[in-house]
Length: 393
Ligand SMILES: Cc1ncc(COP(=O)(O)O)c(C=O)c1O
Image (tube, rainbow, N blue to C red; front, top):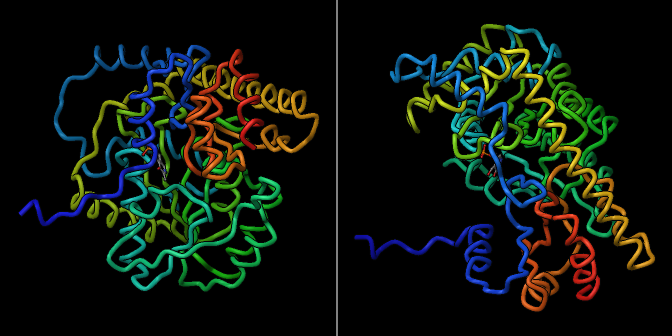
């Protein structure tokens, strides 16, 4: 039977990692990975997480199931982190999910139940995994324009024009701060306009947010999601703790539905629980308990926030150093967008051929669309990276 299966297309990121691992050059560099790394190139466990884990080990008394909606204290913590007080408590209802990806899956199945003939719009470009996670037996996935490759910034006029042509039956997947793979983010004024269009057209906003705190701070980064939450009657939000708590392998996320009132939010929640029962049943506990312990304890909360600021500051500083070095070596402003982009990623604006040449001739690895992980840089390597990119472009 198995011979009837065809080989799935390899995941671009994992395939790149395999080629990188097989490369024997001692000075090779991988800028294609999707996790935060410190100045030594390590993805360490945060102190706040280690301390919360110690408390959890001490205090936990059972390993029985956590229930379909997961840890309610964790869901409440996530609600406070993401929404603040932008929306009435009773209109928000969340279920714990297996990472942001699990939340996307649960919410895409929820949209298919509500709007079986809806078109789901994603940005061009978006994360390759969005297609798999958002696809259901009903879903038609379409695109709205997002990135202007000439300027490496958001083509907001084209995006807004497209959103205005949609219908109240459509679903629009939006990237929360720092989430777009291009590194280009919406400004607060642009989020205001998206919220206005969403109200006017009536489409269902569906936000994927996995990097809150990696841009301009925990509160500032929530602007877009909070603006929409306070503007529209209904919306969906998939949240991940993988990156900002650094607990990638613990699979911690949350799927939120905002309803027009308490009854509709509860109905959405009952459906989300029913959907997760049919996918993975109950969510895992460990990482969610760790997040709850951190958020509920003032000392640990402060420690986590300080650690988050340190990660964010390192990325902003690397962005500035990289942009400075491009300016110094090239004498031009072409790469100034690196300074303006936010979060871990930036599209460098290189062709596939240039990316391959960079890998083969210089031992510098990035995804074929030229996306780099800024946190994968070490300060001392910046001159070499810049020299190599300028040599191929
Ligand atoms: C499209 C998308 N959204 C969100 C996430 C959040 O990550 P995780 O599922 O690890 O929480 C990912 C990670 O792969 C992703 O591909």
